Length: 144
Image 1: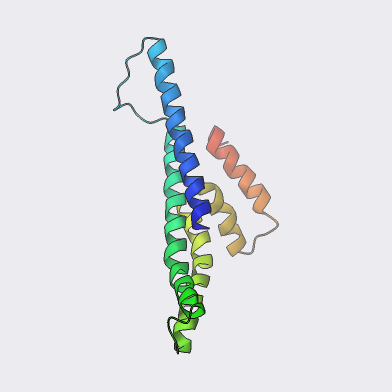
Image 2: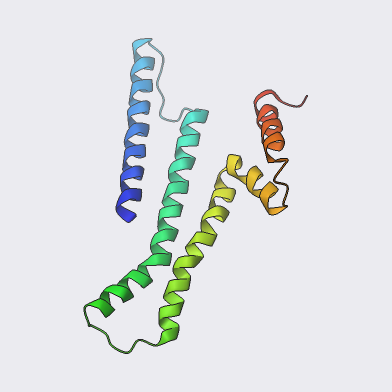
């Protein structure tokens, strides 16, 4: 998983740099002044936020699952003996805790995920689609 997350993050970063290079090239062709202090476009802000979210998800994954896998490797190679049951249970539940944190992280950093998640927590399964459509319309075109 760490390798997969790293490759995704690296590819996203590469595409982000490529997009900025293309934008800079287009602006210079048309003779516009290019200042590195220019405001970021909404797409660049979205990309930065996506990379930040991916980094947080990856960091939490590593923090939560690394103790379990280290302990499993050490036990399988007989490098440690007699690990208390509570340590085994703690490392396993720390990994499970990661599954609980993922939706919370997505809710914090992704507005598109936040609304359906809130509706599900309130057991409003039948109205999710209508609420999401209405919120999407409102974000694109403003209040009716």
